[in-house]
Every structure is written in C-alpha cells, then in structure tokens.
Picture 1 (cartoon, one colour):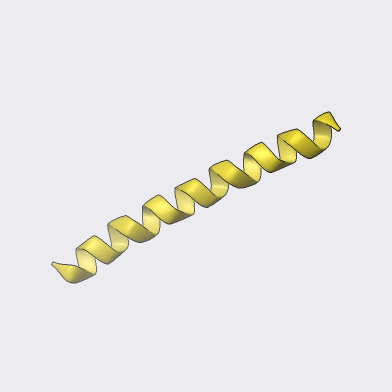
Picture 2 (picture 1 turned 135 degrees about the horizontal axis):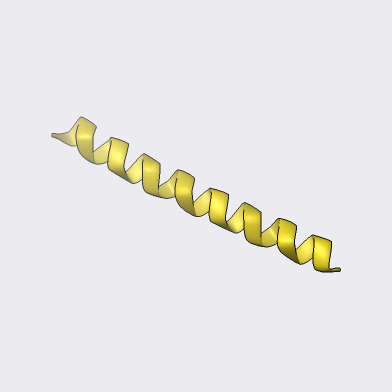
Length: 31
C-alpha cells in the first residue's frame, strides 16, 4: 500500500516538474 502511494506521489511530482520545466522553457524562449 505504502509502495503504491509512493509511486503515485512520485508520478505527481514528476508531472509537476515537467510542467514547471515546460513553463520555464516557454518563458525563456519568450524573452
């Protein structure tokens, strides 16, 4: 159970990181 929760949390963190990286790249390319 804990292992599954850790996997879900890790996926959410990775998705958020990818989103922030994409937004950062969009910002730097706009500059």
